[in-house]
Image (cartoon, rainbow, N blue to C red):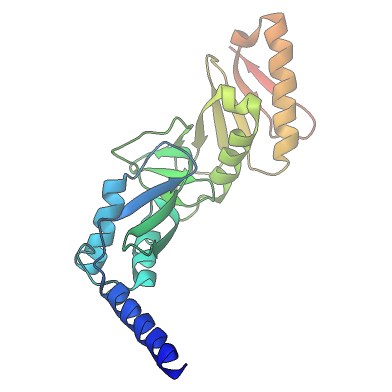
Length: 230
């Protein structure tokens, strides 16, 4: 009985040592969610290699998985990442990319992601999202983000809004597809009410075929739409 127990312990220790000494193979990268790749599997593999000086043909016991995860999560294209090893020595990385909802195009060009944070442009893929122009500060995106998020989640706005403009006074304007007029939102206070007023105005003027008669639609005033004719 004692001999059998000792044999089991020996075999377990031998297998554990052999497994820990197993070399890590080429990383296997899996993207979660959208198929639009702002960062490629090759980019992710390169990040892993750079952070550890080469992860292939490295003994499993020498890998610091937390360090590799931190390297991926520090990339501004990546929202979250999980790195783990399979029994056969394959290094796996599960990556969730950031999702852009607006693209800033001023003296600097970058995306605003779905959580309101900076996201760099990608050489691999360009997102079809509203442009943001005018006076925009990278460290003060709150109002622009609120408007961009509203556009993303509203079918009417998503279909019609092509540009968000912010003046130096932080007054926000919208440009609509195939419309000559500028929509003056003002600030983001009572945003839902303002958008409902815009929808009512648009539908009425579309029915009357008079949308092209206006140069500006001002939604800043409570419970009314003030229009400027051409």
